[in-house]
Length: 375
Image: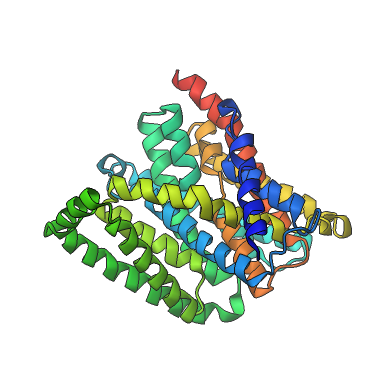
């Protein structure tokens, strides 16, 4: 990779904010970044080469940071959420059962044999997508708290389950690796909790702020990459390492200054680079060779929305049920890990992303409806 290519990638990442500029459309920023990668990558002009080792390594770094930030979005410390955990867990569990049925049905119908993977995708929610929507629209009330709890539980459970179902032949090895990464993340939580309760973090924070050392950010990134190194050594996805460390930081309480610094690094450079790389890696021309996969993508998205809408029987408003179906992180992880392991059919990665975009489009409609009802 040259600096010219890097400049092009960063410039293409600007398409994300441009497409999301109109707030009433409720489009996620990553949509434009994916489109830019698709146009300039394997599907389009072929200018970007996702197999380039430097490009791939930088994308892996971005993937780790993206999942770390997603983990920090889970509202573990929010006391108001605890009262809604019961109904949130029930809804997430029922959706999980429905997802298993729908996922297996789709795997049989399309002959892919990936029923367990589809079930995880259908059951997943995206805290990184839904929680900012809730805050941005000023939604509140009991139903919103229940929605938040449901999304947080589903997001966490599906991130943990994905490495186990995406490559069933190595599920035992993945499970052992997942235990090792989870245990390491739990250990980091206790270390961070001690530093926070002893006052050491606060003292370091004051010195860092006065002298512009950015100590907390440096330490956070060092710990994140150490956990990612453990994950790669134990043959576990980077996704789990990033998300688990994000949960640990969220449980302790992420300092506002670190959150802002991470936002600058992630959303300003690493996340756009990762999503442009992901778009460049997707080959939509395979839809022409396997047009039935386009139908699979639509079916996956529709199944996710349907499974969550059925929670209306638990008195959840339909709009909130649709919002709970929003998925970004888990499908992105499935495509990234699946292509790296070569376990997906040709064109299937694009189908998985199409399914995610169907849920995003449905969520945009549901958000507008929920905002009007809340006004």
